Amino acid sequence: MNRTTAAPTAGVPVGPGLSMFDPIFIGIDEFGQPVYITLAYRNLLAGGEPGGGKSGLLNTIAAHAALSVDSRLVLLDGKLVELGQWEDIADAFIGPDITAALAVLRRLQQVMNNRYAWLRAHGRRKLTAADRLSVITVLVDEIAFFSATVGSKQEQEEFVALLRDLVARGRAAGIPVVAATQRPSFDIIPTSLRDLFGYRAAFRCTTPNSSNIVLGHGWAEQGYSATDIPPTNQGAAYLIAEGGTPRRIKAAYLSDAQIAGIADYAAWVRRPGGLTTPTGTPADWGMAA
Image 1: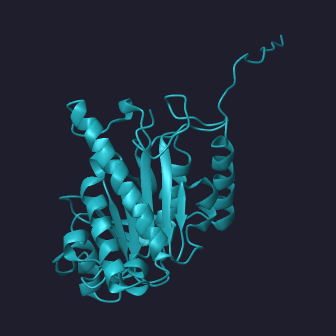
Image 2: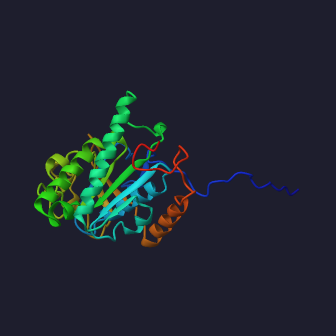
Image 3: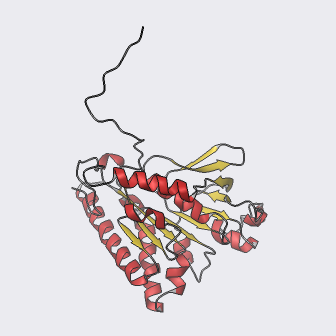
């Protein structure tokens, strides 16, 4: 006997409703088990030689953020092309312009201060998913471009100072930072900034010292050196979380076509009148009513 079902009277979702408070899949470990990180209250630093897989990790995280109903994206990409496919859905996309980069970091700092004022007024210490506010995910591809290459010395120092403040205080305010650079040495990223990143991923490095710079002093001597990663094994890295031991992972990789497809779908659901924040109004950078 054939049975038919009437079409639903209400709209149904055409894709999953992710959240930035959900664990984010970033790849597999050496035993083939999935690896997840929870980014809402953490920051992540990825380092390693060019072509190691840093941008692939950033794009995987960007894809999760793009498909999350409670996320806004702020992107800084000196090369324009590593994160460029997400430009249409980002609240801000900054290319090789340190003036614009400083302006967006100052704005984020003010949003962060506003959110802490709101938390204090409500007797709270951090935002949660129940607060129904957007998580503002900040992705920076190649910190060195803004901290040591473009602009004046004063502008570079201000960029580092603003980024340090965001990394230090932004987590509890729902503003996590994900940053990548080829070698986060003290002349590129001061130790006072580098040590604030709870997650660190060391992709292929040319020297044990470079690996230690990413993971922390002494791990190479204990057998956790990213110099052991073959140059042909792109995407392989050592990942360390706060207080933990480095684990070997293989970061997930999205092709340009896959990124374009996800970005196109994310732009569709975020169109005016489409995706709304849990409060039912379009999200902004502030307190989202």
